[in-house]
Image (tube, rainbow, N blue to C red):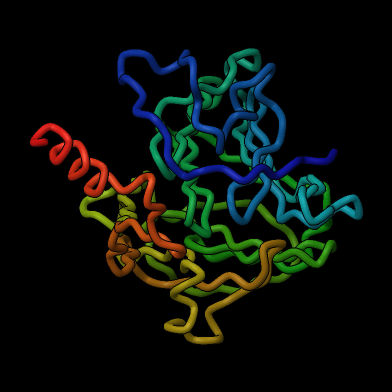
Length: 282
């Protein structure tokens, strides 16, 4: 399956909390979740994500040979799928419960999952609303999983590596040998683009949990980030920074009129007015 990446402004529209299922103009960065069956892959930098009735499937995409200077064609080849065991209602469609400038929240009624997709975040966050058995599945061979209760390092045989963080500790049944480490439990749940003053834009992310929040750095901030905090994507090198807010400003641009060749005499308002006044005086 080939997913087509579209350039889109990161500015959406507020969704009324009383109407969480229907709206006329969804922001373009998640059109594929609401058009037709809502099961076409959507690009969330830097992942390609597909929503179905009972699970969320994602991959780290690669560029198609059909990519041109005008369009990017991303190949969707599923890496991992997030779901639960013993779903109560397999026919229930996922619901967009919230969206904003930089985020969309998907609720899966069939398995009590809430998925936070945040633009600018290196993570896809899954929240379980009540006690259920979580399922993380893949069509690839898992080479190096681990058995730590808060972090799972999953290396697949397609050269992709995924990090799975859990808070509180979760027991997942995986095979092979293990690697363990610790991590903070902070994750983003929403984001906004704010125009608080002229010639500037502020980006703010709302987080939950404790610890520092990691966000993908803007291209203009790359010089401020250490070289070892980066990884590659179809968009080039990506850098991580610890923050929940950043601002971009530019010097004010004065607005003025100018004419390279000057003003033609026949269009000189002052001169013409002077002639009219003199004519009336005479």
